[in-house]
Image (spheres, rainbow, N blue to C red):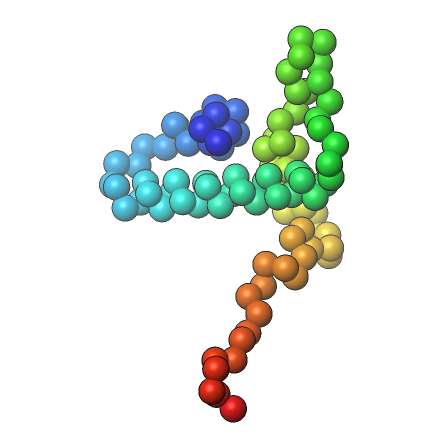
Length: 98
């Protein structure tokens, strides 16, 4: 997560924010983006592991695969949902309420 939020992905070190509240908000948003990218990559790739190059490292990380897919979907007007309806919070009635 640390490498993906820095030079390999979101370039978090390039920010010039000095206020702690704004910086913590930015870090929180980047954590959500990292989770969304990994979720997208796992849905896209399934149980397959990313292809490896000759030196043994993956050609594309899970984060990069998911992040590229998220960016592609944001640029196009695709109607298929990225995450489906499982993220929606279902409404539950409280006990004793009619």
